[in-house]
Image (cartoon, rainbow, N blue to C red; front, side, top):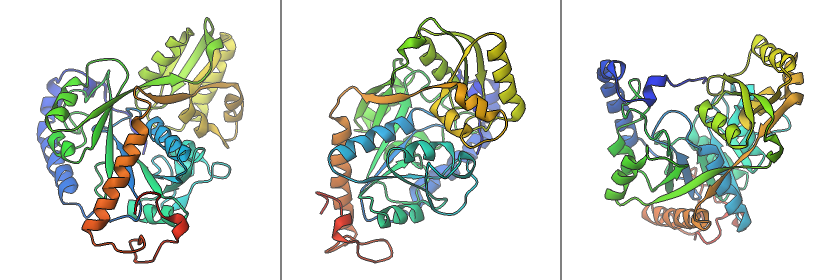
Length: 366
């Protein structure tokens, strides 16, 4: 689904936020009830959820990728589980980046599939079972923290240090997805990304609830030669301003900025506008990896834009390099305890009761 958070969500509460309070209250009651009383399907392997408290991006996808790389480095076979936002497919699907287009599976799953096995599913329980059948011994959910559809063994909630939880109001008066105290009940740890103090209040609340927190920063991969270059920067992500700050940090001079809605597919006239301005003013074109994959496979001038784009690739770098391994270890232990509580005996079982081949069982999880 294409979405763009209203700017007032990220400012001090004003008349719009307070005027929408009755609707926010109702939304919070429903969202909180779903989190508290949802029927969570049990999964055969450890499940890590990378989520956030608010609508919009805080760095979930690069965090999920960092965890997958850490898992692969220790011999595990991670699999990503996604809803496939922005895509049209409504069946459980293994994502093939060489075959699928973003209009079908969504942009984030295409990025995830470059790193590891990725499945999109409208029902996350179906997607989790498919991942186990495909050989995953660790599931990493990109989003889905509030869905309460499957049992989560470790919930890492990402918070942007500069935006925090915005005005603190629930949807539609603000960006918060469910009552904060309810969300904290199901949080294993926080990951504070970047520099800033906007998320400190939440960190303190989490600390009082006994939840630890990690810190991390976004690092750009390459692109040092952009320093001093005049560019046109465009981004269709939850927080385009963050991307523009990243481009600024590379020393580039942004002559033109174009912001679009999160997951938004560009129209022909928008593509033409970007190309024509860049040609007229002799500007290099830079964009995000999410925007880039949405152009792949399109016809018309999209192919020209694809060739001219320079992609700003980013990595999530934990301040403590051992943090990803610690998170994975705790997820494995939590999964083992979950299976014991539920009475799973002998070989690991699929939710349907079918035994998983020994080659597919989690290392160290039994």
